[in-house]
Length: 191
Image 1 (cartoon, rainbow, N blue to C red):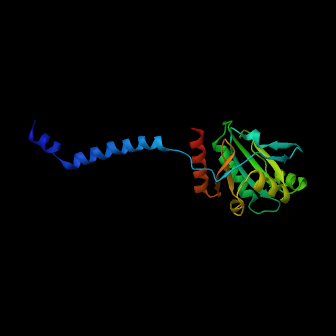
Image 2 (cartoon, helix red, strand yellow):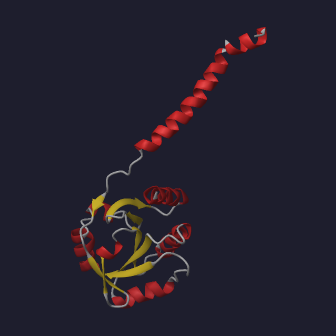
Image 3 (tube, rainbow, N blue to C red):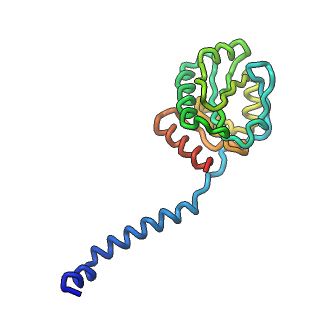
């Protein structure tokens, strides 16, 4: 070996760079083994709500699917922002059958139909269901049957991320960063 080769082999910066590159790949691979979802914010029990067709939709129909839900109230100025955020997320999961979208409409049947007619769900996106609740049903279903903690209902309107078991995993604002985090969390659970 020549003098230059010996100097290169004895160079601590070269060895530091090689060890750094190898350890980066090793730690990244090890991190994949440790990934797990955090504990749910609320564990929902079974529930049922009226849909726009006048029938009832039960929580059993959503088991096995990841659900992105929001709540809209009659006359709430945040309604367009919430629906646009839900549509934006739905576009990212186009063609995925196990991602569903729900909107809880706070009001009576007439108000709910007015809200739903104001928003057209684009065709080709995952299924979207409008469910109706009034103030009494909201308390009974959301707080009692779903067992959603009252502290979370104070921060609504937000998007709710419900996992395959029907548990509330996250509440998200509609800022671009929050939506990106929500999409990342959904992708994690779809893996």
